[in-house]
Length: 83
View 1 (cartoon, rainbow, N blue to C red):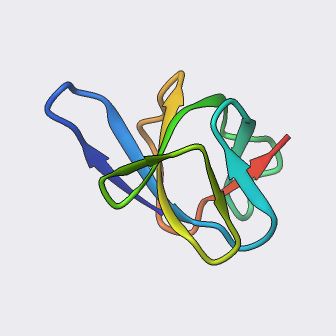
View 2 (cartoon, rainbow, N blue to C red):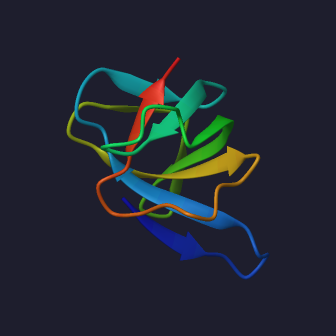
């Protein structure tokens, strides 16, 4: 995962869907290897593929997630799990 800051100040989390699908409105958790508890819980506010707004991303797609509330401490290797 990677992060991208927008001119508005919002932070986009870049990710790749490894299994299943993810869609706008999904509740998610961000997890990190070696940490038992979820680092952050949020809702997907918007989803993009490149510059195009999409409503869902499926397996093997790369996408940008705008989370509500935002999470500023994303690190490479963190995992997003849909609840």
